[in-house]
Length: 247
Image (cartoon, rainbow, N blue to C red; front, top):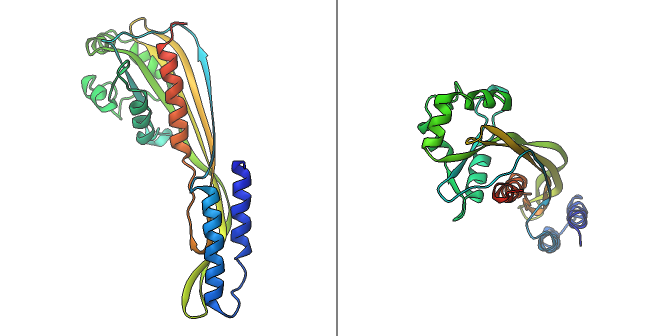
């Protein structure tokens, strides 16, 4: 059964119990609970997510054991700040025994004041100009950073449909009925810079779309699509392969 089929089953089960309760509230509750349990089992408490990645390579890459990378995100809140949580997620998932990763905060502290929020680059063009400064380039080499990964993007809610209503059934038992669903879109692009050679070596993009839903058959059951986490995992795996390759 596909992810979309599961969504349709859950929606049908929820909408089937969304009518006005009939006399005999206990029976209604038992029937609705049984339907909710079946729907939840099918959905496995996980929303529907589709993730894709793309890569454009401009130069060869490769990294030695004594070199590291740093993952940075855009910091200007007025012009689309990249979520700190996403940057941290990529840093954690890319890091491994064969690939050292310096934390964003450690890098910002070591290169003060170049990447402080008030002075940090706004876009890739600004980043290129900043890295080209001899003093900063030398400082980055001193702390052992070979590649700088600059991430721009965000996760947004794109649409929402349905509703969930709560009431009291016979016998004074609280119950909620209905179906609510929404979609989240994650779009991120990572530009990779080789500090040693002072060149842009490529860019990678990750897009994830997911549908979350809440079927309510007496008890609302949130089934959340982990869209940002899926985008992070896809981008991290692609980034590891990109940096390790000498193609």
